[in-house]
Image (cartoon, rainbow, N blue to C red; front, top):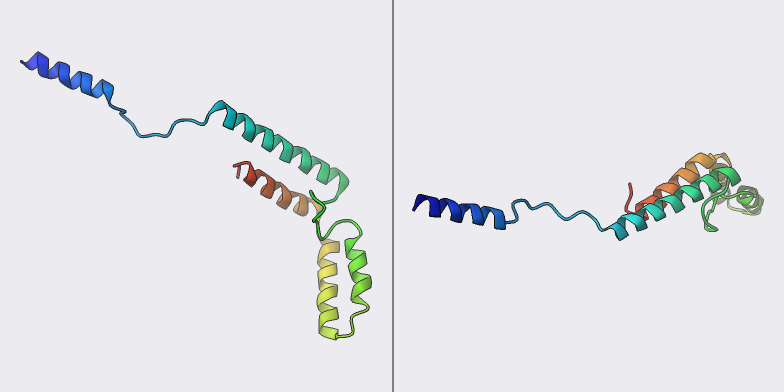
Amino acid sequence: MLSALLLILLVTACSSDGDFHTAPPSLREVTAANQCMQQCQRQYDSCMTNRTGFGSGDSCGAGVATQREAKCDKIDNPDLRKSCQASSDYCRNRLPALTCGEDNSRCTSRCGGS
């Protein structure tokens, strides 16, 4: 009787899940994430080399600050002109490493990285 009970407990223990950890990601998911991270790194390297932002949407890219400053001079309202000039200064003084780093962070977050 005791051996039968022990056998039932053993079979029950072996057939249960045991732990509730989620399954590891599939190879396809890991490969896609790695490819995405590699693409982000290539874009970051290119950004640092070219000293421009990742995409064409970079509002502080090369020459943009100079163009902004020329437009700021045409603004009649002194408060708006001052605000425009401050924005131009921000773009001009912004380090490429900061811009490239921010773009890289956004890129890797889309890959599932941090």
